[in-house]
Length: 93
Image (cartoon, rainbow, N blue to C red):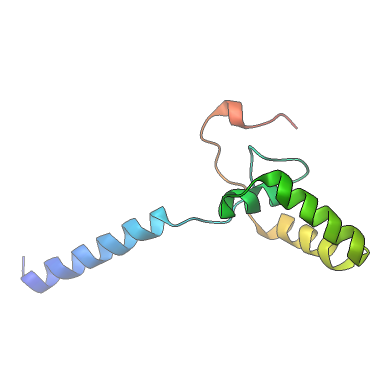
């Protein structure tokens, strides 16, 4: 195999491996209260989900529902569920 082809294959393989290890914003199955949106945001930024929820509720009340309530609904629709690593993490609905 020519050297340039080997280099290209290694480059493609390396990029594929890096993409697989990137963090992705997902709705949480483990930290789920309503739809898992705020739990997913907390997991993505590696912070306590309670802080995210309290901050969201405070902003929701202070702004009168409109911007943050609509934002939550949009995120609920747009952000996909994360994969559960085992069955005990998935809460019964």
